[in-house]
Image (tube, rainbow, N blue to C red; front, side, top):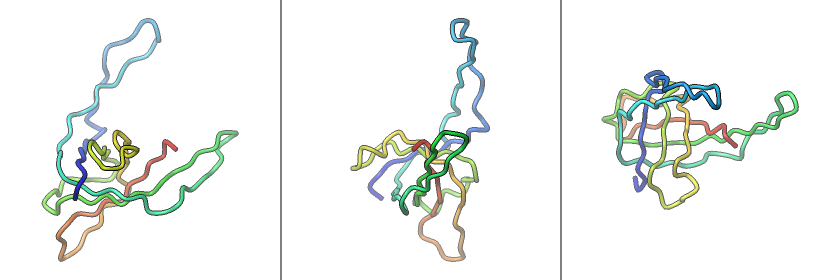
Length: 116
């Protein structure tokens, strides 16, 4: 595992102060509960769909972290913070499945990047 990732629970995010100029509230992201080694690999070609008149694409990723990290749940956000492939850095990947097994030496997460 040559990359570094953080994992956070977006359900723990909180609302920030109200911005009078934009009329919106900012979001204060929850602190990561994991920061450590990972490996991330895009799994296949993007899937493209059209919603209304907007074209939307998703990418599937296999993200591998140490097996000792057991708190990962569906909906958590994995962010690659260091990688040889700079295009992955900072991309939020949403966990859609956690692969479990009786004998594992690493924890496999299936994630999606739906930001195109």
